[in-house]
View 1: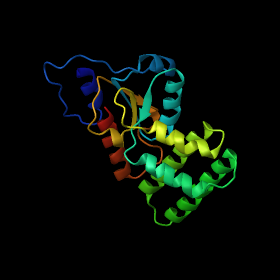
View 2: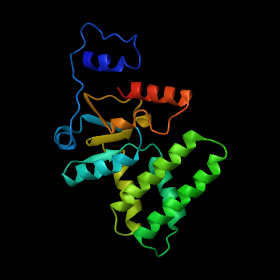
View 3: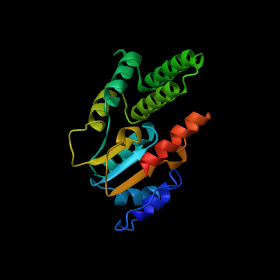
Length: 204
């Protein structure tokens, strides 16, 4: 739409809407209005995965079918869960502590190599798994929840996705969650900020 093109010109100044493009609109709404307006024809995107869990669970609690587009995110989370839990008799609180400890161990190794992209991935996956843990009472409930939320087989649901995984997807209405994460706070170098600008362009 013309409104979206006008908004995206912040990232690509040469963009021009086609003459017959609809007017459209770009607006900011609160969480309550989002929950009322979002439907299976919508696409909900976010810079990172972790916030998607809370929004997805909230929509399901309101009686709306919702799923997170995974593309191997679910298998990564299950692998991380297996590593930190190992089917031992621990509480959900202890599992959260192990996830944070595993995150710290991985980041300590990466800091020496300054792999910022990998650091972001480690943090996002840990935060996503922690968000799932907060919705569970026992570690045994986490994997079934992962498999349920990251079920990509049902097309008649509200789709939530990271921006990376939403490339190529389209919808009449697109909701961008947590826009303050664009650019991502960890992006500092010029090439990182350029990547963030590209992602913002893709989102719009």
